[in-house]
Image (spheres, rainbow, N blue to C red):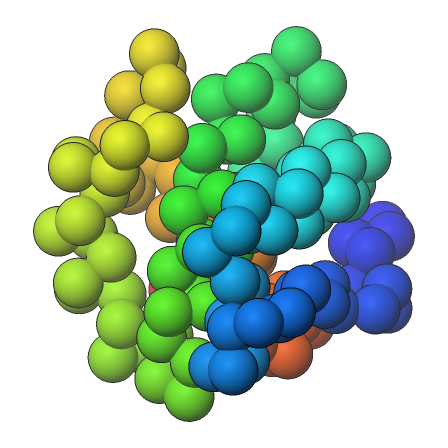
Length: 126
């Protein structure tokens, strides 16, 4: 099964940010659009992708949450960040109408986190 792990990690437009994070001029959303396309194209190859493409919208917010969170926690290992991410999931503004429970989407959050931090290809089962 091709997980897409061999693909390049996303890059961020850091113009004018000076922090290594996306600038506050809207580049975060433009970069998310590119990352979201990656996950839409690769979703069916993930072990939790039961139901195929029709189920993608349930996981889309989880990918965005993992992608955004990893950028704000660069250098922090998943194991240290996961309790905070679990607690923050219920308050995440882009959660969407599906409102999945943390245990149902945490593997997708971790997939996106790993892709940003460069840990893609690590074991995703806790």
